[in-house]
Each structure stands twice: as C-alpha cells, then as structure tokens.
Length: 635
Image (cartoon, rainbow, N blue to C red; front, side, top):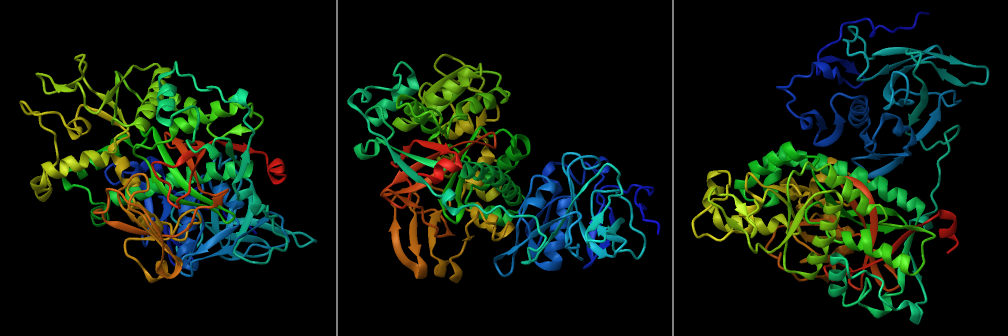
C-alpha cells in the first residue's frame, strides 16, 4: 500500500481558505499566515476564534481545530495550553453541558490500547513541529494506517469527498502494540488521548497529595534581642512603612507578629501556572468585551471614554507593569476571585518587607515568596520605553505613600528619573496647554496609585452630554481652572501606567464574561450578571462591578443564608454574582493567597489574613515561604 502525503505537493491556499470538512461537518481552514490579509486581520485580536461564544484558540492553528472539533462533536473542551504537546499532560476534559469533568487518558505511541475515531493524536516538539508540537483528530483506524484531520499543516485543499487530511502508516506487532510513523521523518508522535475511564495501558497520572494544597502556619519565638528595629528607616519607603504600621512589623496585632505561612513547592508551581494561564484568559475576555458593545455596556463606563479604551488596548496591550490575582486555596485546589490590573497593592509587603523579616529572624532555608518581585519590576521599567521623568501620582494615604516610594525605588534602579506628587499638588497649566510640575517640568509619563475609576467619577460629572452624543472625552485647559485627575490621566500627551484598558479586566463585570467564554474552567468560579437559581443553591457573593478593598460585598451560603457583608462607597454600583467559595480558615484567620504579576507574567506570591471572611484594606500581610514537598508533609 502507498501511504499518502498528498497535501505536501499541492498548492498552498491563502489564510482562511476553506480546505475541507472533517467528521461532523467541521470546517478546516488554511493557516498560511504569510498570506493573511492586513485588511481582514488588522490586529492580533482578529485572529481569535470563538464558537457559540466559547474561545477555541487562534485562527487557524492545530489546537483551535482540535478544541473546536471536540466541542462540536462531543460537547467536550480541554483547557487552554501554551503548546500543542502540552495536551499530552492533560488528564481531564470538561463536558460543557453537564458541567462535569471527565477523565482524559494518554496512551504512548506503541501502546496496546489502540487509537480510536475522535481521539487526539499528539506530536512531540521538534523537527517539523519545532517548539510547538502538533495535534490532530483521528478519523479512521486500520491495522495498516490511520487517517487524520488537522489544521496548520500543508495548507492545501483536501481531495474531493475526503473528510481527512493525511494517512499515516501504522503497524501492529506480535504483542498487539500499535505504532504510527509520521509523514515527516523528523517529527515524532507522542501518542493519543482518549476520553475514557479505562486506564489500562494509559500513561501514569501523578496523583497530587491534597495536603500539598493546604496553607500551614508557623510561629517563631522572638527573643528580646530580636525585638529591635529590622527595617532600614534611612530608606524612604521603609521609613514610610514603619510609620504606617506603627513599628517594625507586618501586622499591628501583637499575636500575629511572630507568625508566617508556608506553602509547598507543588503549590508554588500551581500558582505560577495558574496565574500565567489566567492572565491569558482575562486578556481574551478583555478583547471579547471590547469587540461587543452590548457586553461593554455592562461595565458602566462613560461612553465618551470607550474609544480611548479601545485605542489603549490596540496600542498598549503589552505595557502593563503591575497586576495581582486573588485566590482561595483549599484541598480542592485554586479558585480565582478577581484580577486587579489597576493600582494593585501589597507589592512592597511581598517584594521587600517579608524578605527583610525572614532575614532578620534568620529564616532563609526556604524560599521567600516574593524574592523575585523587585528585580522583575526593575526589568519591566527598563523595557517600558519611558523617555523622561516618571511622575508618581498618589493620594495622601499612608499605604499609598510607602507603595509609591517602593515603586520609585524600582524606577530608580531601572535608571529612570521620577518624582512623587501627592494629590495634584504643584501641577498647573503652561502656556502651551501642557501640564507641568512645580519645577516647570512637563508631565508626560505617569505611574499612579489612584484607581482609574476615581478619574471616571470626575468625567461622569463633566460630560453627561458627551455620553449621550457618543463624543470622545478630551480634557480642556481653561483659564483659571484647577487641574483635575482626569485632566492628567486622559491627556493625549501623557502616557499612564497602568494603561486605560486595565479598567476592563479589573472590573468585576469581566467575571461573568469569563465564565461564558470558558465555562466550568477549573480555576474559575461560576459568575453571572443575574442571580440564578443555581447560584442561590450553591451560595453566592454579590460584588459591585467596581470596588476596592473588599467594599460593599455580601456573602450568602447555600439556599441564600446570609453570612456576612461589608460597608463601603460602592453601594450604588451595578453588581455581579459569583459562586461562594470561602477562604480557608488558618489559625483563627481567613487566609487569601495573592500572586503578583509583572508585565503580565508571574513574579511572586503573598498572603493576607483577616478575622473577617472578606479581605479588605486593613487586612494584614503575613510572610510567606515555599517549602519542598517532603519537608512540607512532615510539618
């Protein structure tokens, strides 16, 4: 028999051309990116593929096709992966309709469990599939060959009447082992993935001890000799921190000053992977919202700034400096509460103070959770393309003071100049309608502790008519008019960190969007714009779509039994409803794990604790270390 490589000698079709239909009448498209039209695909976001509102992947890559084929034909979807070969490490798929996870087993090439129609065929990285690997759908299995459907290989029209792209040679040996060879001599097949509970001949699954997912508390004995100062008040940020805290400690609760938390190395890796994956999911959801006017209206943003948000997304997608995920970590794993991409706090506690606490008490055998945070911030500022003085805008608040000074230290270490502005003190208009500081220096680059929402309140008051007319808000210099925050942050010649688009992923309205795009994702909590019967039965949290520091949150357990609520200044905001998933209670305190991102990449972890179930502005940060698994289990 001659085994077909018939795609390889055919004409390459332009990007997006329909090449054929796989089983279930699923269309397959050319992925020849060299021929993609700049008109049809003007920016990266245009390449994202959705089906029934669920994100499938990038057009028209192999992973996108595999996920779309499974979703259409089987109602199943596998988690997002960085590379195609990563699929071979997955061990579950989600039934979107039934809201359950089903087992997915991997069988190595040469397994006695043969591939079956509809299973995933996975290639190793290397050779033709260098860096990425490859995935295809098996459409026919015989003792001499298999047939597969795929995207991003060949880019040629399928033969008329065929529902497959290629045939691959197969051999069954005397032991019943099924071996497949690739059409490309330098590409290697890892094996196949079958949704089945039968693990016979499957690759082993590494069972994670659930105890590794727990938070553990340690206490130290602080001798009199150790009660001396340990923060260097000659450093402005540390002096401000000591002043804010009333002493050299992370907590002003005496009983907490000798306590720290530990997590396993396994959990450290899980936090890193989850944070990086979630950043990608939130970015997908942000793009989806900005492309959907009806969804965007749920975010309660002034119409006059929407064009600026879209422009910010198009021009400054990769220019975020800081952001923070907040998680609940239990024996069942991780669930994310929200993503703060705008004015994220606790960077100094995690990136500097907890490390000094460990050093002072000679607790350096294990890994400080924030050890890389400061140096990563320095790298991010070096890559920020800032070409002048960074004006750091902050409110007259003790926490914002040390936070601003800590960031100023990172900016200085990156070789950049900066000034801290309290409120808007000293800012004024010059004769050319630019904003200048008290030294006459133009304000062109800004990092802020202020939330964007603070500026929006000013805009809402100023431009109700603009909202109705769908005009674009532009701050105007007026003789005698004092400068407002929106005048600075929305000025055309002022570049602000974090970018304006960070309003979208920081808004709680993003959470129901995520749930609709990635239903039943293991890191997400069921979220909705409306209070559903399902959420009433599960228990839910009512959150204002815009809020800070845990304000105006109400918690209800199963069957709407009231648990707790918080006060605040955001009671007039629209609400979303998120599944109630309580924080673990560790040594008398509810404990939240936060991961800190720099330039969209995981950089470190910290914990916050409180007697309340809701972490808020006054919740303490305690030191966090990562401990090797063996030692952790012996605690």
